[in-house]
Image (tube, helix red, strand yellow):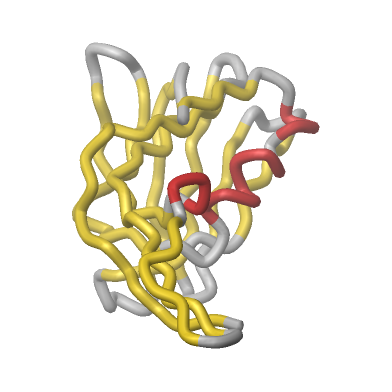
Length: 139
């Protein structure tokens, strides 16, 4: 799955896919040649969820955990405010300040990533790499 958002009003398309997913602060990288800020994350690929076993009304499900890249394009500069210093964070919100041209990513922990951009463009790209499989029982 690859999603590119050029309209800030559509950012929830990406937020809905990555909310509460986890990333490592060390996986936040600035790609100078592309002028983009890239955050590698692990994401549940619900589209490829499958049933692996059934017992009466219960079913055992398997969901692949895939590597994805959240990319903010057209970045002039960025700043990370990290007061928790725990290394691993979850995605909470992505907002865009139209006047300041700043894309802000917040975590449920005290972490804010601000990227000053020339033009708004945020994308989510799956790398195709399955990191692991999550299995669980459900009704």
